[in-house]
Length: 463
Ligand code: 5BU
Image 1 (cartoon, rainbow, N blue to C red):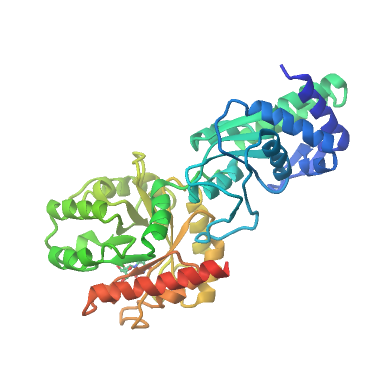
Image 2: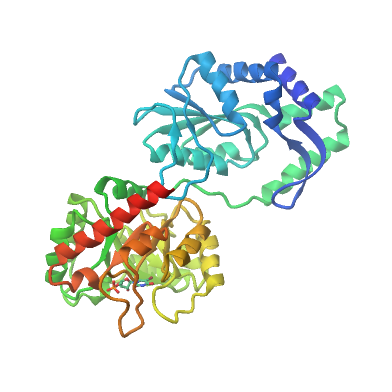
């Protein structure tokens, strides 16, 4: 049963034109028979107050340390709620930040605080996830979201998958029921609305889930170990492998393997690598470049002598065979496993043109639960910047073909410096021979790490 206070709010929203019926073209191109625009309500202080009072009642039993509103529309409402409950407000600036520049949170908070998120409207829930991720990357927790109006079909299921509970003050059903009773809308309008909502069920846009655990782990490691360096240990014996790895394991974010080039591979190698990766906290990444149909890659990932799924936290994938490759690899829904998709390789004359790269970004964006980022190279800062712009938010850019001493090899590899890569927007550099073939791999790793980190800090300041 809808309360009198809520009825009052709905009637007023209708009266001021914040709820409209007619024909409205949505961003998706679809024509909607209704439209909500709560931006207007700041001009009606009494209505603002009613919203805040009702929201306070709704969140009464929840536990939280801070309140936030998603800018712009919900921020003034949240401010009132904060004031009424005497619970401090924080907010994330709306300006879009690229990954690496932590979104700036205004207001005071302590790591581990729980934030209650208030928003004016929920349509799918996808955009809420970005806000949650913004707070999470600053060490805050979000477990509840309170919205004024819920026009979603399965917003609460979607948020529940992200471990967040949705609390809706007024639903679309409440609105149409009351306005029909009042005679403000007709039966046929209600039918149109119901039909429209049911087409939405089949027409759902892909939704982004929060970043997977490997993506989160990498982002945290970049900040805690202060390194953007992945070493590509392209050597052919275990002793060479560990002789280089052990001394540099505090300097790296990930170790990248080509397991099939080791001539003395055995299970002892895997055990030693696993143990070191736990002790020294780095991610293990097998550059397997899976490219076959789903069924084949499933076996290549899970079986065979290398049994990659047992030890690699992440793998590389080509999408040339379609998205079945991702689906095949992760068919068993493994936990804490992820991948990087090859978007633009570093080798001269590769066939990945702009269109291919764009399609990889689009396809990858649909699998955030199993994709952490994209591999992309360009010879210039500008070229990398335009690549970075196209990368869907929440995903990392990894750049191979990085060397401080060479511009390429005689087999088509092309190099840029660590600084060019990071200033261009890359989050992680991949260095192979620049470290492994150096007379002093430790010293070289530190040079790459320092150059990348300096550029990283410079980039943060600019952003
Ligand atoms: P290098 O020694 O720094 O050139 O080694 C680069 C490594 O990165 C090597 O293992 C390649 O297989 C890998 N790589 C690459 O060089 N370029 C790419 O586009 C991709 C991977 Br994808």
